[in-house]
Length: 444
Image (cartoon, rainbow, N blue to C red):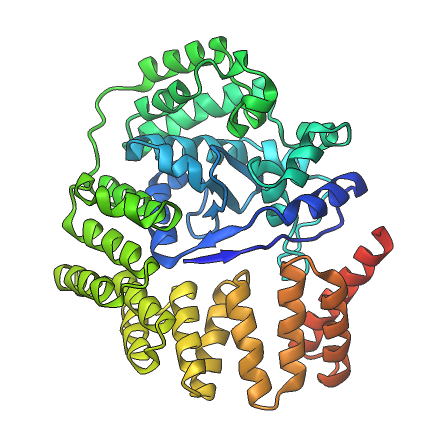
């Protein structure tokens, strides 16, 4: 699992831009191929029912322990890891995803984004990852101070859904769940977690209830929707498995290893128990125990690419580089188009000085998903080692742009523009970052 402190930049209103930049330092994403695949399995039937493309709308995990979920663009749903850890069933988590998908499908995000750019480049990745910090609600004194201050009210209004939008999203979400064969009772169960929140002072409320107004009337209305649409849905064993795996692995990384090891028996799936054990033991630097657990899990599911990916991560982080290359190679063989798996493989090749193959693998990962800062860092190193300094500079510029360091991004973009053939695709990428950095400088 990787922590990435990222946010993106576009031509957004100045007050929102300045607030987001200040807040973004407090938040980031947790990137993991296994967890994101599991979330995709849970989200796909709901997104399809909503008329959205599961390949386009990605579900990403925010590094925040508070309970919140939100959308700030039409191509991503953000879930705080604290919310995932509090969900008790797959239907509950799918209910949250369905509700956020409804905000996209019903046009709530499009309407508030009319003044925002939607460029899908590294420099113009949009406001989503900057807005993560603003909407997540749980990170850092600076973020909390801004949210509670006078200026923060503008940002709160930007993210806070109206009661009408919430009612619309609730009703749509129940329909999506019913169409997808998911029990809509999961939606009601989620709101039960937030009962009484409206009676608390705003500073004590979970962020979810601040961005999604909750009231007794809304709960009653949702119960009515569930009564009308509910019934007849049986638990999907595939969804139940991936829910346990996502929550199990995520909690193993975000809770103390001792806590995890004391609760291994809570999962009904042996491979999930072993995966959690491997993560907990690895976090305690008990490599032999970690390898024993992950190898036993692989024996149960030999064709699971994400178990091989986890094995590769353990080996790489314990400096068993040659073995890590073999583990990642097997993961890539089983999941050749997963960008995070490719990124891990590329890094392993890089540290063993197989630079040309590392470059090829990392470029494939970048084409599939350029939003991985770790991959971009490794890719720039590979280009530099091969003497392709122009390409190293443009990739470095994109990485700095993703992390919000626009002044540094501009420096490297200018260097890339000077080194790359004018008019080439890589030259144009550098130009995009350079223009974005110049606009950011004017706002300061």
